[in-house]
Length: 157
Image (cartoon, rainbow, N blue to C red; front, side, top):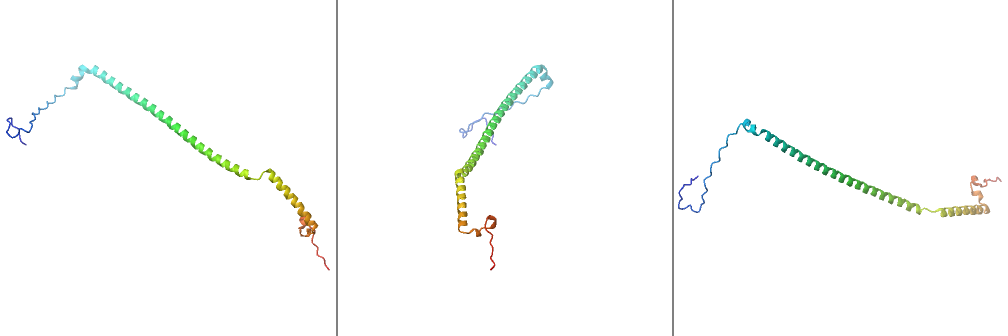
């Protein structure tokens, strides 16, 4: 708001003065396109074409690196999925083993051939012994006729 005077005042020694800002140069008028391109046209187009080719080569390199990275990621995912499938298969095999072990334990608890033969012999001997006892005690009347019991007859006096 206040203008600085070219002369120093007595009370403003502590305020530094800034040099006056030079006016920005006025923009030069834009030359016409025909004048600027006429002498530099072959050099400018070839430079531009070279830059475009360089950019295309860099883009191709980036694409190749990205493709290689994606193929490595794909390989890692396939390896991980195969490991997970193997782990699941191992878990299935472990559960199958435990089930087979349980069935084997139950089968091992069943009586063996010797016990079955012994049971059959004891049953046969006891059956014969009981039939002999029934016949000696004249209890065969209590047996049904289909088993060889004597028919019950009632005597009429």
